[in-house]
Image 1 (cartoon, rainbow, N blue to C red):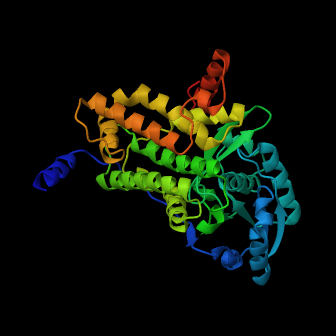
Image 2: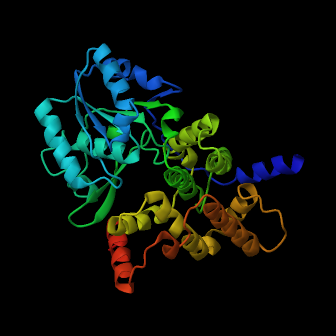
Image 3: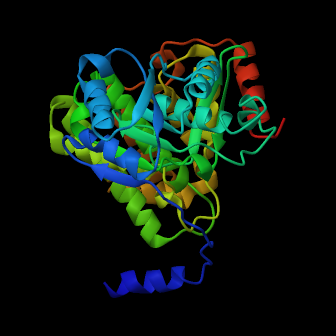
Length: 387
């Protein structure tokens, strides 16, 4: 124990980076809480909302009825628009913006997962902007205002319900781009883990891996970090991996669903990166180009890329990879730091396989040509402002 505290004292000689933490979303968590949506909207002073949703499952499950019933009981008018797809399209955002303007909407209500929430955020920007909403995602403009966004979450994955991020695909150019602004952080998020129980196993696993990647990309940093932040990240990673295995075998386990849902929110509201002076979202950036071109599931695209990324960079961030191997993946064998780091990477890849996730392009089911890889790399650099 004394050695542990001496180690912490030595770490204190390294300057931890300053930060500002902002997480304004009101979280309403638990069984049946979607019936409180109307009250939450009324608290915001909204008069009429646009309900966005994806496919028919929101209707068939009765969720959409419960949400609209709660709005009616609260005296809130609404319009509804379905059809949000995975990797939400710019064309849909434009259509939703036009409908919202025609209906006189003053709050966007996303009923769904990350794709629906991201589309809602994009519409919220567009309604307060005279130009083309793609300007924000292309880096040509910064939003000055946004309409409020509320969420009824049905998929634990993107963390968009608490984050400042949204990602939209330009269906004309196949560019997938993200935009971050605190203006569109949801004002409330209703989170009922029961709503995720009907998801296919593959979609559940993809969501778990997106949560993991949001945490890993804040964790693998060079330079100062906070011990508490690292411990939170490591605990979150271990929890998600353990609960993912439970859901693989017992998809109706409420407690596991609840753990995963809350982890998804915490993985992308910046909590697991506080005090770090940098973060590496290279895997996400690369995956945006892959799914922009091939329209693959986001979580699967991430796992297909991560092992190659990790083997490429681990020597430049060796202490972190060793810590990851020890504290997250449970590597206990002796060896050089490089050997331990590589064992941690392989253990992570084995985990992906254990829940049915790919770890290569071949396993993802795509076979890009050299020219396509070069084009995706060029677009990735362009998106990062380096081309």
